[in-house]
Image 1 (cartoon, rainbow, N blue to C red):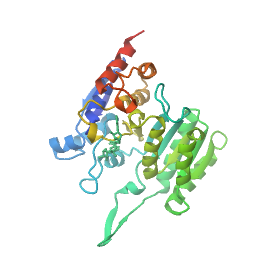
Image 2: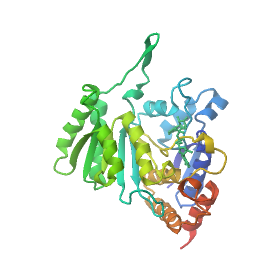
Image 3: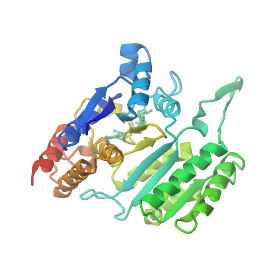
Image 4: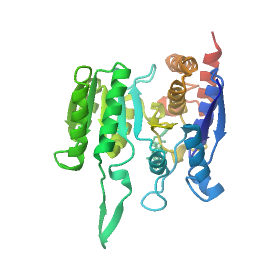
Length: 338
Ligand code: NAI
């Protein structure tokens, strides 16, 4: 079956890692028709907007996209394209599996967790204003509906994947109303799943300490928007860095797959970007599309390449001396070997 997928290369290393993922997916046996579309700086260059209307309409229409990272101006300029895309398409759940990979040394060898992040509200509401000169406020929006929705998603995810425990990170001791509501919703949903999934909660500062001390105690993590963003990068650091952690943004009608990492401007166009996080995001996409054989073929291939640990092939972030291209070529070659 042919699937139509929007390809959003984005900025910085985005074009390099998305084209690597496209090459690998094209060689995997999956039948994908790609629709390349501008986003971020390329959108500004071509259409005047970092989130062109035609890009938004195409992703909404086709329902699936593979996306590279987008640069967001710091402290000024346009609102984050990622935040707008997630809100406009109602991509309410970010799913980020974090696990050890063969051949990638890290402090721990038993990391097997999934971060479920609420993707549409919290402090990412973008509602900021200057109250009086020298004083600004930023509104943290938490709704019962969105909190229940993401909690349900996390527990359903746990049940469907045979996972045992959901842990909610919060700061409801300080933000009694906003995080309080998020936590209360998590507790309400947890009760409905009490016979199947264990529920636990932790104040986020302690949660971060526990994560870096013993990540094996966690299974599915449920977090609001900002905490999910920060903890995703922290968790990536447990397994080898941002080059090896994939992600998906899931909504009711649409799904956009993208690596957790950003546009890494300092290594852009140097051939140094690790394509694996984007390739792994592509694997998540293939599973979502029902292309499970192609997905497994890619997974087996990158695991084999990682396990062989030929440093001339791997990118520098995971200890190699190779390039985006050498790593991608090796994965494709491994797929072709019987
Ligand atoms: P970043 O993730 O781009 O880079 C952080 C560090 O990780 C850098 O040292 C970078 O070189 C390294 N890194 C990231 N991905 C890598 C890869 N695939 N291979 C090898 N090394 C890699 O985060 P940073 O520097 O905070 O943000 C840069 C820009 O990216 C900002 O404009 C930010 O807003 C944007 N960003 C976009 C995201 C998205 O579009 N989903 C997510 C995170 C950041």
